[in-house]
Length: 306
Image (cartoon, rainbow, N blue to C red; front, side):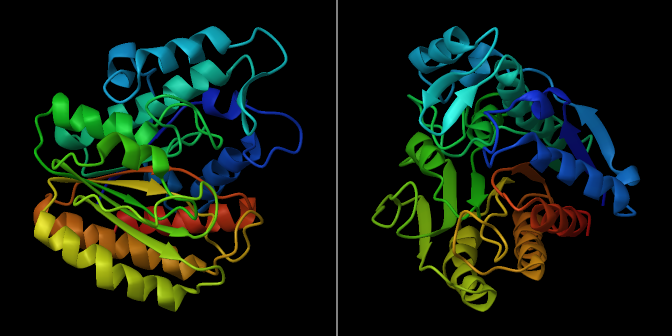
């Protein structure tokens, strides 16, 4: 099955200071690994456009969009929160990251591809309607999901988030929206210290204690995500693909392996095959050990390709 790779060079030029874990080396490692994987050259690579203000405004308040634009520095750094800053290329990178998911959504829903992976940064799933946080400026997957709903008229979109941190921004945007099912696994208690008590009918949150291994992770997905998704019958499956639950990741304490990322992607593909014509749009979120990240992304994209 063909997989479109959507990316842009500006996403490498965004950086938030020396020793920041969300570094340009992450995306370089991912792209190099895909290129060296033996199938990377067969991916249909597309350039990410900049997201338009009206596309961002479907999920973000105008005040947040205005703040990001106004904060973009000509030199040095501008801080949006203690963990999230901008250099002179960050505005372009964040617009390209959100625009990549919009472009991928168009390609998949218009029939030019069945599956897409957006190799972009900054990540997005912590960005709320009102603010940037947790390395995230705009909520890339949410911008794409809202585009699928409003531009393409879909009635059911699933967003599946296996990052080690809860996708609080995505949940905030779609909580109680019956058109969207949001499923998330995450270490708890851990940043951003929320999600375990959600009671929204369209949210399936699975908090996992520190040191959870792949077997327990798989059992939790089979027990919670898969039955809910079978009932929901999504027309499009979107993925917040974070790889920081890997046992080698320095920022968290779950114990997933490369195989677990291939396994979860295969289960996601089965969901998409049953109700969505196989259609999947995935976008990079976390993952801060570049070697483990690169290996896991290759397994993820290979499983997307079947």
